[in-house]
Image (cartoon, rainbow, N blue to C red; front, side, top):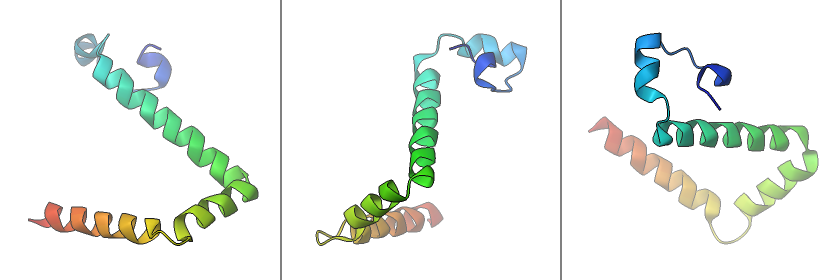
Length: 78
């Protein structure tokens, strides 16, 4: 999909550099996928419960994600 169709506000001079850039299209596609998944979670109580069960059950996924986020924030402060 063209950048202007995706709603990106890129000046014409810059747009020429990005047209056909696979990496930019991949980033945009991942953002769209993330938005779709987030909407599905927000719109479904069943999905919300399943996600909470996955995060909070024994296995420590929630704790591991929290520690990873804290480590990333600490590294960013340096």
